[in-house]
Image 1 (cartoon, helix red, strand yellow):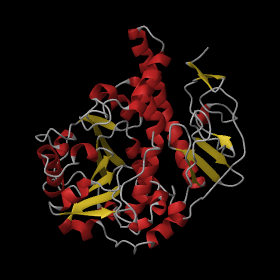
Image 2 (cartoon, rainbow, N blue to C red; image 1 turned 120 degrees about the vertical axis):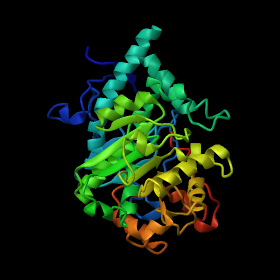
Image 3 (cartoon, rainbow, N blue to C red; image 1 turned 180 degrees about the vertical axis):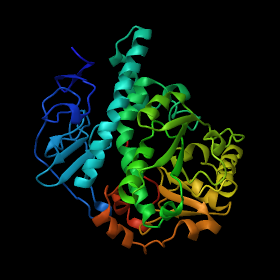
Image 4 (tube, rainbow, N blue to C red; image 1 turned 180 degrees about the horizontal axis):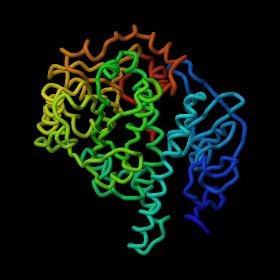
Length: 423
């Protein structure tokens, strides 16, 4: 039998290595199974901060009994499309407890994500088999160990200030769960960030650049943030040619990144003698944007820490000396120290989330203070107005989620991002 057999929910499944669009006229997903249809039990929708109500655990396995309406369009049931109602339901968490919603536009983007991810999943399966053969165990055992590392995060429980160790981060089984889950999170959150940045005119520079926009990442992993940027700039800014440079400290992400079409370089931000532009073989004023997605907490968490201050000095030199236009920052916590640490160096951190219910630094654009009006050509909307606009216009509404702010009393409540469901 072709592929790797798995037992899930009592059904025997086989990975065929095909994206949904290649699975035959019926459009079945890459696992050979019956497509599920069912009732669509929906709450919320797009109405501002309370756009998507969270679903409580209601079965013995901790999974939601929420059954999206329509056709399943991915392997594990994270993506559903109901053509009759024009509603796409998707999940970003491991047990599919928390549904998000988008429309036909978002559905097309997420379906393209599934198709792009198929090549990465195929390669990952081969790597798990190779490791399994070396260890004398089946690939399923490798996947199970990866799930344990992904969920338990044993290194995070120590004093190293990292989610996973270098070796854990390179484990094919852990990478399987990264590909399965972080793909949804990183793609949708980056796309939402870019829509918010666009309202500030952040990409106006591209029309007069005279060359492709050049983007690099720090800690880019397989490159889902870059995939979102490529889609956004292509579809909304008519910029099909973008030069992309993905970097990460873990070299095993290289073949995944290249499968998405992005060049890859090894780069460690803690190596303060290294220069990102040099690593990307670019000169001064030749790199436009640096994407820092969910890694700032590891290198810019503690003001006054010599290593963290040195990393911020390196970023400041990119903006000041190398003429990088902006840092594009996503983080987990509503209080992101990188923002204030860079502001103390003469930068402006534009907090892209609506600040009407308190400080929220999960998504930011950081620019030199003297270049703010040159790069961000528009002023932000008054507090509360952005939320109303996003309720109607955002592709991925309530991303990252905000309804916990209402529960804690808005701006009068306590700070801190409640992201425990992100596993």
